[in-house]
Length: 199
Image 1 (cartoon, rainbow, N blue to C red):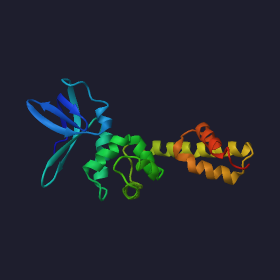
Image 2: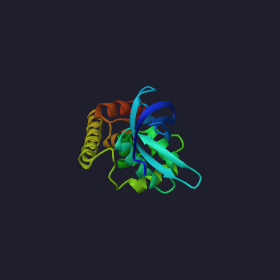
Image 3: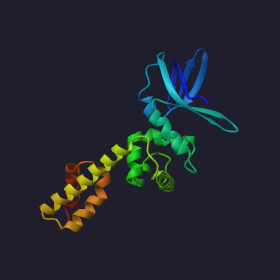
């Protein structure tokens, strides 16, 4: 297994790049998160790698961080997810964003990634829900959940203080919870949504 390569970046054209390692040119594919961090062509570069061996091809994938590669390998273990889909997910979401999607069962965010349908998104969440995510350790995970819950509760309290019924406030905040991470942003979105409603 090829786990890491260090060489000169000869060419880059998403999702492919060419790395010269002591005279041997390695063709790799990488997610956009890695491409954003690539140096100029002709510069030295180290990438963590994962080799996928198939009957008709050997595909080498490169990553700028261990978290990216860990998530890629985790996605490959999900039934029906191949390297191209895994690469698409890593190109559409950061490791941290993906971790939050799994922890909050956010199917809507996952299906915004090109090539990811609802059934695929639901399967990914189902199979990875109880596994530790590479983007968040257990402590950070708990803090993120606590912060999200606190923001929702604060927003609901603010809406009821403004005269909206608690049931209506809970409903609209529940619908908007994935679109904002702070109570202020949730309140603003909720007021826009409720502006035509009845207090």
